[in-house]
Length: 78
Image (tube, rainbow, N blue to C red; front, side, top):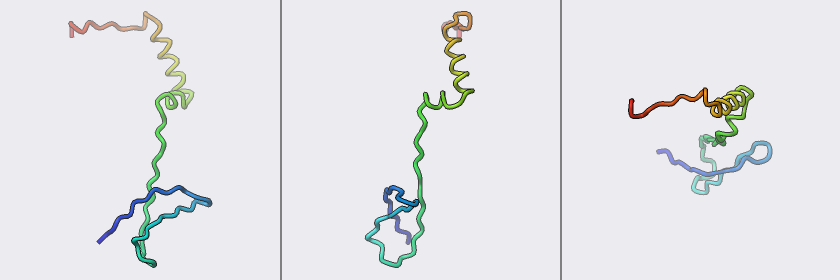
């Protein structure tokens, strides 16, 4: 039978991770899997994260202000 212990921990000095599991007997062999939640980059940060993205965003903003670049669609005719 497999028993699961789920704990949140903070990585300490020198990369040490301490898990508190008082229900496990001393000397029990365990397998530890560490899952790290990566912070999601917000949309604005992503759009500005590279030079190519910044250029693409700035071009899109310029195009949005240029009436000759707009395409009008009559929804009734679709």
